[in-house]
Image (cartoon, rainbow, N blue to C red; front, top):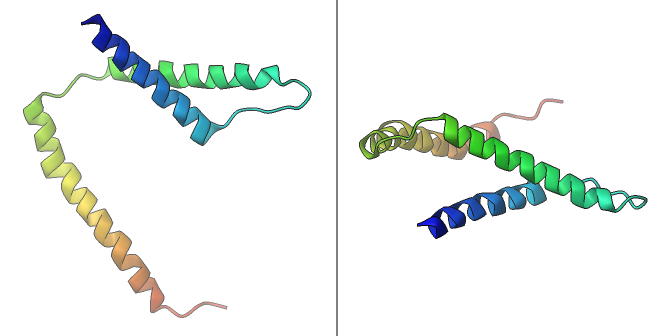
Length: 99
């Protein structure tokens, strides 16, 4: 049972490390290279703390509530955004450029 929790928290930490690498970057100075590792660890730690804090603060949805939210709210919103994404370039292609 404890291994499941360890795997879950290891996954959270690894995803935050990947997020830090891909989106936040790290400070790199040729004069003080040790700041790269420290800055990377601090950013990853702050992301992990924020993720766990938000996860612990909000209540969990029951399965039926989650399915209702997905089918009634997120699916129509996603389909509308997909239609918007397809139709916007078609609409904008008929507008002549403004000079």
